[in-house]
Length: 229
Ligand code: ADP
Ligand code: MG
Image (cartoon, rainbow, N blue to C red):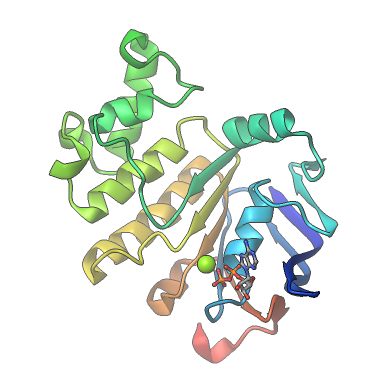
């Protein structure tokens, strides 16, 4: 479970400050998929950055399973990211020289690269199968479609069995069919793995797959537009 409690985040903006998050509170329970939408510049990525310990809020707290993760030192924050968070951004950012399976094996928690043990390999294969890429394990990124690369990216984010999955516009580079499949996959994995998932998306075509949808405007959550769901 992830709890965002009254987050305020501002960026320097000339002599003033720009408020990117304006007292945002939000919770995703285990197994819950919360969609976050809103116009460009409304603070969606800032929200995920704070949740991911990649930005420090001016005030407010982030808790994972009741433990506060805001204000940790660099090493402790890196450990939280490695062990408790799965992070999926717009671009898959795969390592060009590694095949799909090795992308997963290169994650430190699974550990080992070429020396990866049998158990690590088995769990990486299982994850690739879970994202529908069992047959593509040996393919290099350039041999995969955009949708397949994003699936590898999602599988890689799940290597450490994170309790929280943070996903920022995973489908913006994909065609509409691959888009549906990726959202569907994230919804399924959220339920089957019991992750608390925050999914930023412009794409409300799949809003029925969300347990909840929140809309940000100017850094603040606005009342749900029921018509949009
Ligand atoms: P969204 O993801 O909804 O498009 P962002 O969180 O990226 O919105 O941005 C929210 C606001 O904060 C925007 O006005 C943006 O220009 C500003 N912003 C985002 N990142 C930075 C940054 N690193 N430095 C200064 N301003 C930023
Ligand atoms: Mg953004």
